[in-house]
Image (cartoon, rainbow, N blue to C red; front, side, top):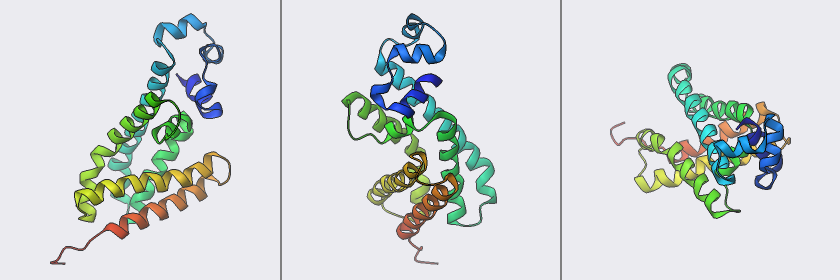
Length: 187
């Protein structure tokens, strides 16, 4: 799966043939087929592995990073760094598939499904923090992902350093959260 993830990062969807995955993994093509019936099954496994790693890093960020975060920007930065760490560990290919708008319909559906599953646990927290309406929370969650994605793309495409991309993504995502935050009437 690691080999497929690296090929996906380097060459996109068309650059993940079973022959090359097998060669990179140091196994034969039949061995790859033993575990993955077809390309979609392999790509699903790569995306699910990425999402599992990201969930784990989000959980660690929530447990260990947030208690030390003192403001909205530092809280946001904890999660941006978790995404960056996951991309460094697993490659950007699966991250790109989470937001895919073109290509194979099944792959787009997979990306959308996994992205929704990643966001779902955070929607109540976003609602609580911002006091935004359910419709606004849904819109905001999509905006947060899009804002972070556009900046992080500049990093993994080599246009920005990780530090610059993380800083800029943190500032942008924080600004969006702040823009949707409402004060309670009694505050």
